[in-house]
Length: 213
Image 1 (cartoon, helix red, strand yellow):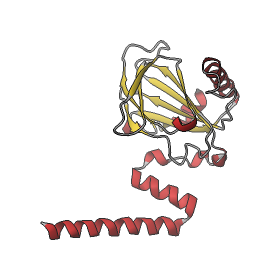
Image 2 (cartoon, rainbow, N blue to C red):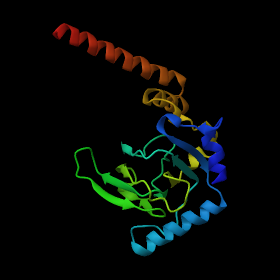
Image 3 (spheres, one colour):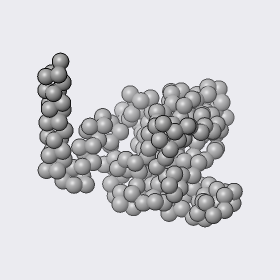
């Protein structure tokens, strides 16, 4: 993991230190290719017809969690998650955690306990399912290095090949991430127009609220 570690450390600290984690988004390479292929083959053996025999992955997202803090509900539908329908493989290492999934905010959630070495394959309609890490258990890391957790997510995103170094969305808030994504995919004029439209909408809403009160 030395390659990922070089990416997620900046000036001796984690590059997403506010969130208590380090993050690296890199083009996949030989040792990880073999690992992902093995995980997919195991999934295909256990769920024939559901999991593919092979996964065409181009990138791996490495997340190193230094704090025993969960992850809120979200979908993997950001600009670096890939636009294709190829399945995603997520490998959990280190401390055990509770991994929860649900179809929507109002759906009943399903939770599974992930131990170090467990993997989940997101495929078909479930690729962008809502998920969260609701608990992390201290003292359960069999790999050494204290109470920490490492997650590797393999993705198929050929449209991002060569753009790995520009992946800095995690440093910014949602508004800035939206602006940067729109600017990159649709141009600066469109991004600025959307900002102005949202600003006018907020002003209109604020004015309306003042009149009502």
